[in-house]
Length: 117
Image (cartoon, rainbow, N blue to C red):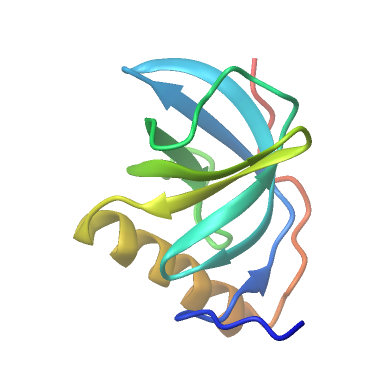
């Protein structure tokens, strides 16, 4: 089956933190990212389709204190992960910047960048 996506995906593998109403609720591992969203592998977590969340991540070439948190919407849910869509222009810019940095670094798979407490 042929996929018809607006934005090409780039493989990535590093940890994300998901917030709901400002409270961290989930850690997961990004599988891929595009300028329109991302997919993360995470255990079943109680989040539902159309729920608004915030995604916190660190850019691949950033220092340990340089994190980005942007709004997203849960658009796909499986027992093993979630598809998140950029909720606004700020999110799209952040995801696009992630894609650009990954391409620039010429690294399609990243090691974990930080550990959560």
